[in-house]
Amino acid sequence: MPAQFIQMLEKNYTKVFNYTGGHPDLRTVVSLAAQYTYANRTYSGVEHQAVMDKMTSGKGPFHVFRPCSRNIGLLYKVAASLLLDGNIEESALQVEKKDSLLDEHRFGQSSYRVISSFFLKDKKHAGRAKKLYDKMSKHHPILTRKSDFPLAVIVTAPEDSDIDLYAQTMHDYFDALHMLGFKAGDSLQTLTQILTLYDAHFQQEFAEYVAQLKIELEKKGIHIKRIHYPFLGILALSAADTQVIVKVVMLEEQLRNSKALKGVKELALIIAIQKFVREYGGLHQVIDTQRFTGWQGILELGDLFFYLPVGATEGLAGLLDIDVNF
Image: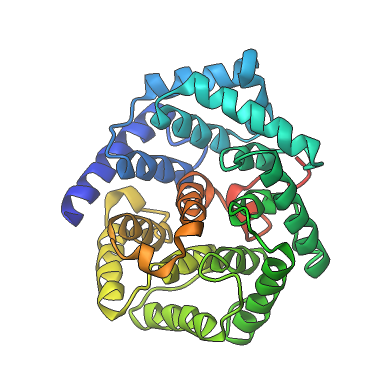
């Protein structure tokens, strides 16, 4: 199976590269290829361009995607998401509707608000997400910015969300993981947001488990960068044990040596983790079923946005390489 996956990834990589000429950068090309490969689809540049043309036309509901056009990598990824979803017009209408709900709750206009619309349920959900975002801003005023909109929406999907508890739990995980060797910054904040899907209450043992995953991967020769932090959270939520780590490491090595990842080898671990968690059947045993929608949202967010070009910041803002003032 890994051989078939890598073969299809390389095939999609070649198609994306040939159509785009490698623009805007290799990370976007590889992430697009991976997005199609996860979906077991073959990339079509003609189909992809047709969706992007609709998004940039600004006509009808597609006007909502105007902020995305400021970054070509993001435009590529969102267009692919709409295309793979299968109902482009309906998806655009839903994003337009939900973006307006976020606007009503004073989420600033930005690419991140558009992204958040993909995961929003209703008006009450928008209210919960804004409350959490404001609480996050109080705990980490320097780190919290528009790039945190999507995860604030995903985390607050359950109707019984305890906003104060979530915000405190994120803060506690941030401090604990920093003490355990994780570098402070946007990527660590993103990781702490993801970890609340395990339990709304802070769990020191879970923080230590995440740190141990990092150590085990480093022992296997994988250099863990800040870009990998959110995906360590995803791996932790999958209850990865030693056998799982071995499988992830083996796939990571194969991916790292594939022609598709030449020049962007740091994406090998990300793709290996993303592939693994889609195939592992034990997630429901780790995550409360009430919060499984949030978990699915994290996976979708990872597909779309986590490994676009790194800019000056490290978390979603950096991974998207979008100006935080958008």
